[in-house]
Structure formats: C-alpha cells, structure tokens
Length: 220
Ligand SMILES: N[C@@H](CCC(=O)N[C@@H](CS)C(=O)NCC(=O)O)C(=O)O
Image (cartoon, rainbow, N blue to C red):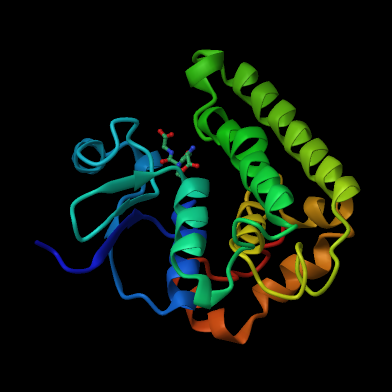
C-alpha cells in the first residue's frame, strides 16, 4: 500500500489549491501530472481510473480511497487537520458562510470551465459560437465575483477572519483563471486585498513559483 497521499493534478489547475493546502499543513504528497484539457488519451485513461469524469483534482489516500471534487477535498483537508486552522470547524459561527462560499465557487464559477475550456462541447464546431460562449461565460464569472464581493466583507486579513482558510486558497487560484485577475480586481475590490495577500504569502512563494508561476502579464 502506498503510504503517502497522491494528487492527480496539473500546473495552474484546480489541483493547485489542494496542493497549497497540503503544503501549508505540511503533509507530503506525490503528484501525478495530468493536464486533462490536452485530451491526451493516455492521460485521460490514467485519470479515468480514479475519476470516471476524467477531471482533476483527485486525491488518493494511503488506504486507496479516492476523493474528487476540489471543494470537498479542501473542506475535508481543513477538517482533518484542525491544527492548521485552514477552515472554521463545525460549531464555529463562521461555518455556514464557509460552506456557502466553498460551494459557490465550484457550483457557480468553476463548473463553467467545462464549456469555457472546450466550447464545442455545448456550441458545436462553429468557431463563432465558441467565441460567443467564451464571452458569455466570462461575463457570468465576472457577475459571480461581483455578487460574492457584495456579500462578503472580509473581517480581517482573509475572507473569514484573520486565519488563512482553504476558501482563500480556492478564490485566489480560481480568480487567476479567465476572465483574468485584472477583471476580478475591478469586479471584486473588497476581495482583492485578500487574494493579493495570499499571492504574496511567503509560506507559499516557492510553491506558487513551481505550480502556478506569476509569468509576465499573468494578471491579463
Ligand atoms: N467539479 C470539479 C471540476 C474539476 C475540473 O473541471 N477540472 C478540470 C481541470 S482544472 C478538468 O479536469 N477538466 C477536464 C474536463 O472537464 O474534461 C472539481 O471541483 O474538482
């Protein structure tokens, strides 16, 4: 039996907040690099063994149990390692809002990338239709960030207070995707200092450089 955790993930992908949480907790893990969006049949066949949807992230536990769904993995990690203070525990008054926003990010925003990354999945082969889908989903994502910004007033350095939580890691990574960070800054000025703080967290500097590098013009 493999004694360590294995993350099926990829550079810049939804596995990055999971890997960041593992880094902050200090848990060793192996990575199976699997950029699913390249549609390499060998990579997809490998991922399918742990996730029939052929999506990353997936976390394989030493027992062989598999967890999929980024939000579930993040909440599970926070709950399993209370000493790392990565999320309000059951009974904490912030728990409801924690679960609310941990669900909102994948339900309202992340799920749109299934079509954004490959618009022909819903729009067919017409490139013009693909462009319309890209533009419409960009607007929807921007609306969602604006709505979230209107509903959360960070009560400390981070979204839920003074402890960095997996919600901060999640929003920081997902807001780097389309329509891009500059748009996020415009739509969500209240959340902006938080993601900038997480981008600049010295505990994650080496991790970001390796797994989601700040390349020239990354904010777009
Ligand atoms: N609901 C899933 C979504 C995962 C997801 O969309 N992952 C992307 C990479 S960031 C993927 O594997 N896309 C390939 C595909 O959907 O075919 C989660 O939150 O983990």
